[in-house]
Length: 101
Image 1 (cartoon, helix red, strand yellow):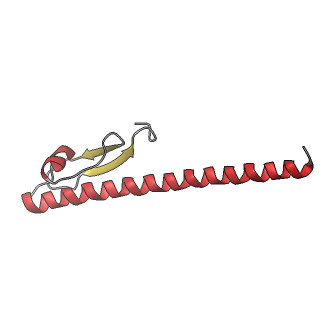
Image 2 (cartoon, rainbow, N blue to C red):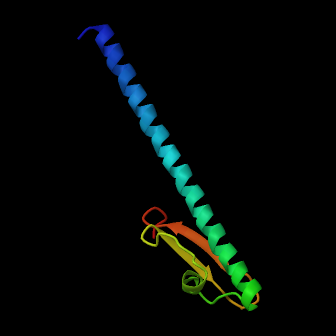
Image 3 (cartoon, one colour):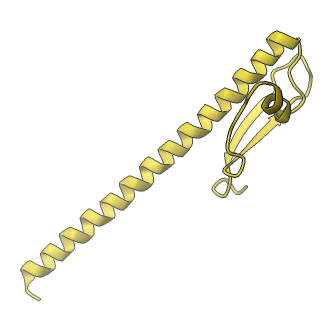
């Protein structure tokens, strides 16, 4: 192979590597945005429950059953810690398989 062919090959490899890195970064950004959306949806459903019923629900399943909260539980784990019925629960959304879950 000539120098010119090696140069073309090197350019192709660099462009492909940059494309893979870009797709990976976009995917991570999208995952972060999705977890934030789910966290906001859980928080909103909990606030609606509190406004209508006068207490925060004990668990996230109550929100799923009574407040139409929907998320993919094969992909996300929602940690919902309600200590008292009149204090906003702690809410954490983890991506399964990536956050050690």
